[in-house]
Length: 118
Image (cartoon, rainbow, N blue to C red; front, side, top):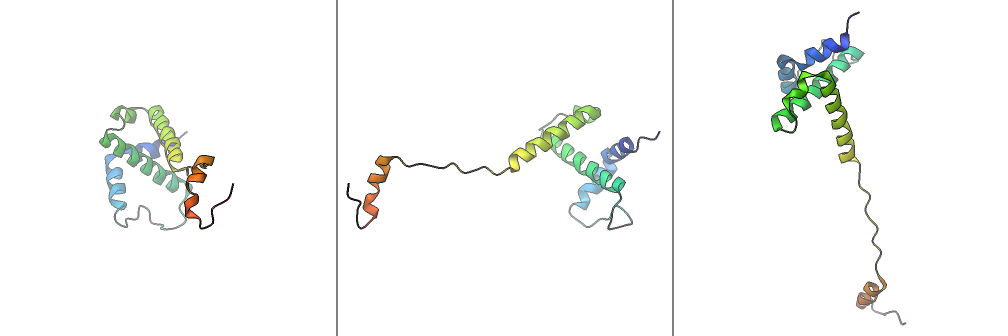
């Protein structure tokens, strides 16, 4: 049986398609004849193009070694790690609630015109 996903990965990893994808980020290049309603294979191919683009950018930045491209298991592991890291970075942090000590409240009483009588 034909491994379509493997072929799409291999095609998306090539220098030619990576170059086209990099140029398409700045300009309006259509990859397919249909501009709307992409098929599931087209969406899968675009996803792999994006993933390999990010991987190549991380390799050129020195964040990851080039040996990751030699093995699909390493690639998948890196994509999983990157997705978890990106989710962790984008989750909003809850502000910590600060509780003032009683001494701090008394020091700031000068702000009020009528201080609280103890």
